[in-house]
Length: 157
Image 1 (cartoon, helix red, strand yellow):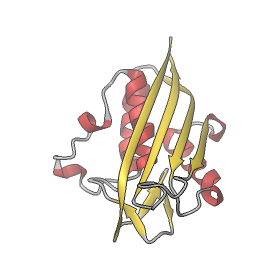
Image 2: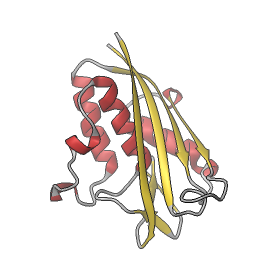
Image 3: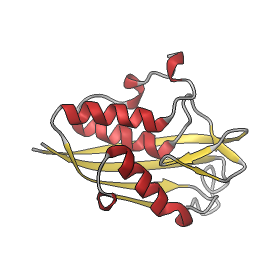
Image 4: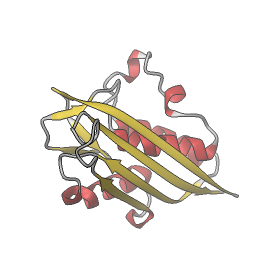
């Protein structure tokens, strides 16, 4: 059996927060506003895995009103979800992602982000790809007011 999952996330960019994408910290004057560390890319991957496996979504797994998830490390959230998905007998075939942001430039850290996601999921980095798109200076992405991510995964059992 094979299943496809789609994940999506969007966070406002604000002063005084760190910017994490795929578990990697980026040097930027703003970071994601969120209940956890706000890593939109890991949140999208997490939702894609949950959707493909039929186990729910990130909001039901880690409710934002639950204080124990406040400022949580999204790498740990993804690891917990992946353990549950794997325990249901699923294996990742591949994950493909798009990160949408104007600044900072993503390309210099792309391989580091791919390696980070692969390491979190304990899979080969060749099974993960991430590409970036700008907002063409249009709000909210192009004016650095927000960062957005989409992820699709293919699971097999």
